[in-house]
Image 1 (cartoon, one colour):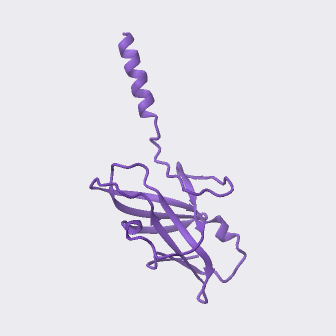
Image 2 (tube, helix red, strand yellow; image 1 turned 30 degrees about the vertical axis):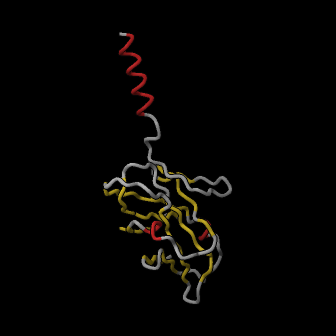
Image 3 (spheres, helix red, strand yellow; image 1 turned 135 degrees about the horizontal axis):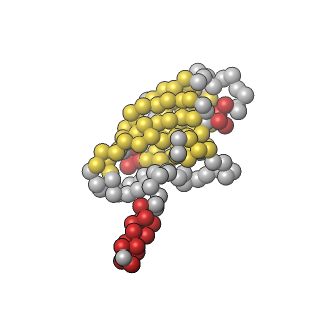
Length: 150
């Protein structure tokens, strides 16, 4: 009976370890945390938009949606051995003459050589874009392909 109890406690502790699939941003600003559907909304970063490394682009964007100041991006990538995969959304913060702001979504987890095809929904907090008080911002693009209208 004692062995059963120890096995039960061990299985309980192992099953409770990070099963929620939270993805953490490498750089979180101001301690802001927004919880959406059981996942932490990631904050996008403002910085230089450089030519991304090819390894940072080994994924595909399947769907985008913007609702309640949250950007949801459905991504698909190969892997399965490393958890969680880290994605980073970066912008230079410049609004061009057409009212567009460019973003780069980068897949920062490399060297996951497993071959499972993973679908994941990333959630980014866009409330700071809504606080811009700028009528100039009308659309934004991600990786020069996916375009979303405010």
